[in-house]
Length: 453
Ligand SMILES: Cc1cc2nc3c(=O)[nH]c(=O)nc-3n(C[C@H](O)[C@H](O)[C@H](O)COP(=O)(O)OP(=O)(O)OC[C@H]3O[C@@H](n4cnc5c(N)ncnc54)[C@H](O)[C@@H]3O)c2cc1C
Image (cartoon, rainbow, N blue to C red; front, side, top):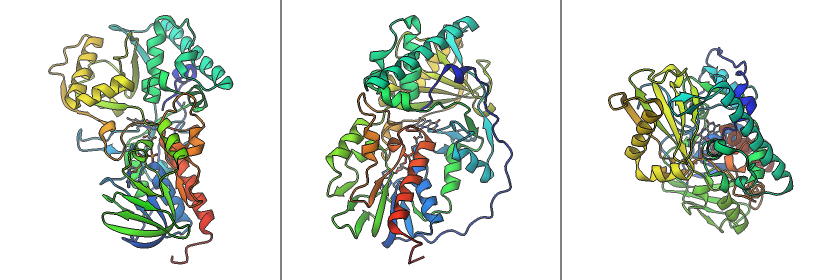
């Protein structure tokens, strides 16, 4: 989730790291247990699962990471095939790079990090907003954020309920920026407490090789089985939990579950006994919204944008989007759709998403786009079977659900993942921290180094 503020619009980018030290010496591939006893099982190899695995490896525990998909990364994967250059299908922004552990790890891993350009622009019809119009927009955005934060101190209600009444013609744009773009849901479906507690995300950066490529590199030394969906977790006994996959059964003393809230509530993993109602309810209140990228390779820099420039439209309707122009200096332009409009559009399929993006851009820039688009691609995160959505903005009144979701089951099953982070939800670094937190709890539970290591 990217929280925009006056500061983030105006501030110049942070001094972010570029050069990298030499690659660390490659570690030998770990021996991966295929069944039987392990100290711990990690379910899912997205950011949270990878972070948990690295923590358990550092504590010399014997464990396995089980991943349902045929690649690691979850909602943070880099595709190098579609356009021949790195294209992040999910997360791309490394928020708050000056304090984000992933930025440091990227440098340590020999990858290149560069700062996101300062500021964003707003398109008004066929022109960009003038300075005075930007000032007006930004001050309205600040007032909206302040109203949400003020309201959150008294009670946890829907963000739309507390927006200032005088946002005038900027209201739909502000609702898009804070809602579908920032939270993947309409503001009417987002808790004031959740939005106001999510930290500022200034000073962003990008990984030249791709954010997903970074996660894949960080996962490489882990004992990990791909294409191995967990079907059942039996936790009747405190001493021995049984984890079943189509490829074999593991017996273990601790489990870290990192799957998304939509997967958790879908019934794809059967817990026996069931996940307590309290936690199922919490997951339901943290269900994922919708957000997708429509990426178009253009014949040139048709819109005169700088590399990695972010543009919003001064919109009058929900049928709007954000533009991420000239990705990493290429001619790839990414149109981001989200919220209920994005969900309906994605349900119509990739062709409809691409049509929307082409027509919308053509209208905004007065450009005939017919022969201007070469390769193209649209993500459909709601249809990814092991993810089922985008990010977990809390429903009105449900900010406290994050704490409930993270409560351990019988002191041995730990839930992690972006939805369990109280302030960094909806981000890779939030997922990462949650995975480390769960792994620390497992290390504490298991005591010293593994007897079997
Ligand atoms: C379009 C989009 C743009 C985003 N942009 C940004 C951004 O710019 N910056 C940012 O910081 N964040 C961004 N995010 C959010 C970020 O991607 C997520 O918060 C983060 O990646 C979530 O990590 P996670 O480990 O919690 O969950 P996931 O990434 O969902 O990982 C869970 C893993 O569990 C696996 N799994 C599911 N079921 C099973 C099973 N039964 N058995 C075994 N494995 C299973 C899944 O395959 C998956 O790999 C974006 C998200 C989306 C969708």
